[in-house]
Each structure stands twice: as structure tokens, then as C-alpha cells.
Length: 444
Image (cartoon, rainbow, N blue to C red):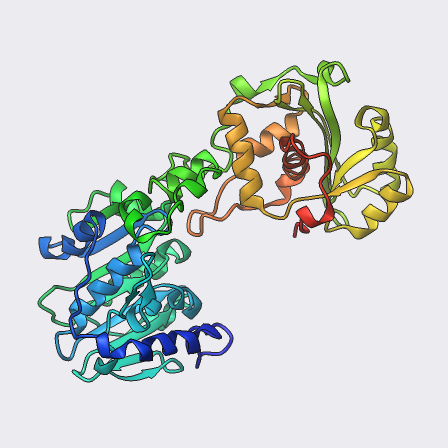
């Protein structure tokens, strides 16, 4: 729908429609759906007088099903208008709309009917953003990246998918829309994955202690009966922070920090003297090149015999030339055996390095994955920075996330961080003999 608003699920829609038609005779108005304890607690919260209710939980924890069921509870009252909001249409089509309109296959092989029986639907207008029922009730579909689109609508309740992708000002505008009379009350319902306690969502629902607001926690384990066998176990490879967020449904106590496990008192030590073959299994140059007049960052990083990773030296320079880069790196050719984890967005630099007989390993694209790795290494006391690396230490301490989007803010002050995380990602995989181009993507 992001590319063509007449399609809700692109190529998947025909298959979903076919499932719907094959099973239509089995669909009954008000078909029974069993909610787990977390979904049930959230579902009943509107009966207790709350006016803003958030489902915050892990991956596949059942938030969307609870949301879809609550939407239907509103819609069965004739003439009800509700709003289903997301940052854009594509956020809505992935979960709630699928459950509302098409149903889904469960892990036991049975097909669960859509929440709204197809015979109850009068029309679906995805261009205009309306789904209407024969009883006069209506769902308004709202993409709220432009919050001005929310103004002037009147609904009984608002339902917000992926609240963490929506700004605080947009949510404030959404929460003011419910005012149409409804026996269930005028409520704003929302769902998100947990982030960190400095985020506006946590402060809004927990920090401000408003008696009309309620946050409910959905651990993935609560929905285990509806998940494929081994699904939760398959996520054991996630970082510790990711497990807390995406499996346990916990909010991280990071105060907007990116490298929240870094402690200068523990992780900044004198280690440059250990960079030799007696102490290190592998040593590389990590490189991040700025374009034009920007700064470039370099580090010398090594994996010790006990598996720990050390940053032993840094270099940070503005408007560097390739000749200057090669001259500095030449000091470490023997130490590193000529291996550079390079800024793969810079093809010219790669050519210069290879012409000078450096073996180039391309950098990782995924910022969040490399940040998670560094956090885990700091948490386990397996990553250390030499006392001379003052620029890198300062960059780590000042790195932050956008409080509205939770995205890492990459500023000009990430020159040495980028060089370090490229090298660390390469060194942390002690089982590989050599990483190949297929293991990496360009960093943008």
C-alpha cells in the first residue's frame, strides 16, 4: 500500500482472499477467540476507566490480536467510528488489518477466521482510507507521518500501531480525537515494542503517573501456544538488551544512551603495550572515511588470546587524503598483517588500499546490530579501550538516540566509533577464518 494504495497486502492479498473464500462457510458472527492472560488484562482495562491504554511487549507477544479484538468490540455497536493509526499504511497492513480482514493460519495447522466476518463488511476503500460495515460502523485508516491529517476527525476510539514510530506531538493529536459517544468509553489504544526509559512513551505512560493512563506488559512467553515450536529458543542468539526488549517485554534503563553498558572506570585501561603476537590472536585496522572536508577515523583493534577485544590506538583527522591514510596505515602493516576493515561506502579508498597490497574486509551495514554487540562486550567486560583513545571515549559517552524514533543519531562525532565498530564486528567472530564480501553490506 506504500506504493499503490489500492492494494492492502500486495502480492499476498490473492492468497489471503483464497483462504478466506475457502473457509467462509465456517465463519460465524462473533466467532470465539481465546486471549492469553496478558491480552485479557489489556482488553479489560477500558472497563476500569482508563483513557489511554498501551500494550508494550516483545516480538510475537499477541499485541495485534488483542488490538483487533478490541476494535471489533467497538464496531459491533451500530454507527461507531474508530481510527486505526500508524506512521503509514504499510505499518497497518502488516498486522492489525491482516487479522481484522483476512484471518491467519495457526501453528496447529488450523485456520483462524478474520476478526471482522466478511459478510459484515460493506466496502473497503483503501484510497480514501475507509472500511465500512453494514451496521453503519466505520474504520478510518490514518497514516500520521503528517500529523495535520489527524485534525478535525471525531471518533469513538483510536487504535495506534507501532507507537514507537510516531512522534509525541502526533500521538498527542491522536489522543484528542476520541469524543463520539460509545458505551466502552472514549479511549486511545496503542501498541509498541519496549524501548528505553528515557523515551517519551515511557515517560508519558509511567513517569507522569496519570491515573487515566495504563501500560500493560506482554512477554513473548505469554503467547507461546500460538508460536511455532522452538520460536523462543531460536532467539537465544539475540543480545542481552534485545532479549529483554523483544522476549521479556522490558524497557531498558538507558537514559537515551547508545552505549549504555560502557563504564569508563572499567573499560578504559592501558592496553596498547599488549599489541603483539604474544598477546593477540588477530589485529586489524578499522577505518571510517569522511567525504570532502569531513573527519575520518581510524583505530587499531585486536582480539587477545583470551577472546577479549582491545582498541589500542586511534587517529582522527579532518579532510584526509588517501596518501595520508596510506602513510599512517603503513606503520601498522606488519602488526596487522595488512588487514583493513574498511569503509565500504568508499570504493575509491578500497582501490587505493588494494593497490597498496592491503587486504580489505568491508564494513557492516547494520548499526543497531554492531551497537548491540559492543554493548554486550562492555557488559561482559570483554571490550576495552586504551587510555590514549580520548576521541573514541568521548564519542561513546556522547552517543545518543533520537527520543522520538529511538533510532541511533549518527552525527559527525561518530568517526572513531564507526572505525571501532567495523573492526570489533570483524574480530568478535573468532570461529571464522575470513569474512567475505557476502557477509557484509555497505554502510550509508
